[in-house]
Image (cartoon, rainbow, N blue to C red):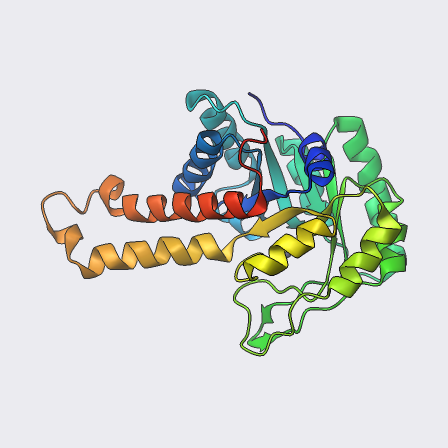
Length: 288
Ligand SMILES: [Zn+2]
C-alpha cells in the first residue's frame, strides 16, 4: 500500500481510545524493523524523520525512495505515514516537495502570532496536497547544551487557537521531555492535558518524548485524548545495547561475524522488540 497521511489513522485512534506510535528512523535497518513489526502486529504506524536524521540519510528524497521501495518490496499493507518530526517552515516545504505524506511544523519557539501565521500557511498547502499537519504549542523539554529543561506546559487557549486553524494533530507540552527523563521529573501534567482536550475537542493530541514515561501515565494520557505517541530514544538505546553485547561477546571476531548483516542483526531485533512493546502498550495492535 502506498504512503497515507495520518488523518484517518489518528481520527480512528482518538475515537477508539488508543494511540498510534511514531517511531523515528535513522537508516535502513531501523525502517525495515519498524515496518515489519507494524505488519506483523497489523498496526498502523508513523515513521518519523527529524531534520538531522533526514540529512544523515542523504536528504528527504532518499528517505522517500527507501520507504516507498520497502512498502512495495516487503508487501506492507498496514497504513504507513512518513512524517517530518519538528520541522522548520522551510524543512516542511522540502518534505512536501519530496513526497512525505505528513509534516510537523514546530513553531513553538516563535511568538504565538508568528506560530499562527506560519501554521496557517502550511495548513493551506497540506490541505491542497492531501498531507496531514502537526503543530506544536508550548515547547517540549529536553537536554540542550547540557541543561535539562523541565518540560513546559502549553497554554490551553493558545492550543485552541492553533487547533482551530485546521491542523490534523496538535503537540502540546504537558511536562514531557525528549530523551531520558531526569530522576526528579515531576511527571505529566494531566491537568494541562485535560484542559487542552476540553478546548480542542476531537483534535488528536500528540505526546512527544515517549521514552521512559511509565505505562500508567501513558494509559491515562490516551484516556485524555492523546492519539499519537512519539518514540525515538528508546529504540536507539535498545539498538546500542544489543550491538554492544554482540561486540563485547567477541562475536564479530568469530567466523563471518563481522558481516554487517550479522553485526547489525541483534540491534535490528532489539528495535523490533521495542516497537512491539510500544504498540501493545499504546493499543494499536490489530487496528490497521
Ligand atoms: Zn518531539
